Image (cartoon, rainbow, N blue to C red; front, side):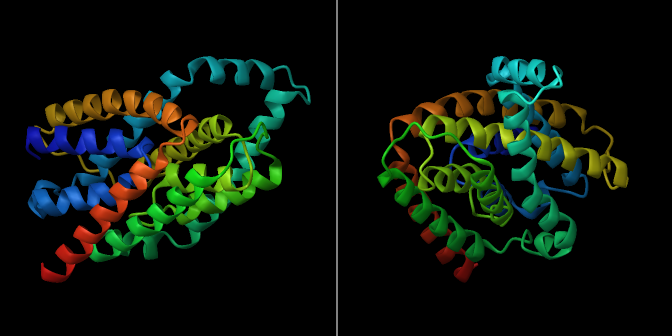
Length: 264
């Protein structure tokens, strides 16, 4: 992989993991634009590295929240932190089930089907538009809400459906406070990312090519830095109800992707 390609894909991953425009969809579009040759057999390792970078940036942004959460959990009491951790576990169930049962079917959708990505981006736009119209509240995420938000996260495994967009929109449409919805959305994905990384490492499918260290390092750095700023920015965007701009963006990119897919 060329160094410039690694940096570009790293920035795409970092920004779109948190901004509600679908990281998987944009990576598919990025690969199509850069050409299939820019993503060789070791692409799984590169993808794992990028996801690790964005997970790490989330931990840095929410380091205080995570520390308070861990302190509460290790008190081994039925406190607020333990209840929040339970909600995170509940939210993970749909994605874990879908990932285990439909992994091969999902992988087939990541084969450069640009028109499908475009259509799913338009679905993301509709979710964002609806969420942007919702009134702000002081309500916290409940256990039943957590499971429904988890279903939205499972659906977002489709390329073009934004994970953050789907989970935050679903949470807000359920009547939850927008800032709490964003916080829950970003924290709920950390265990899933590390679980997926562990699965890929244990599977032995990761392939390292000689001379790939620098692209991997630069891709990691690009994803971490852009992810850190995107995560921080996204919290402010949700709070100020500015999701309509991203809805418009997803419509424009989605339409272009559909057209490009048909003429390619």
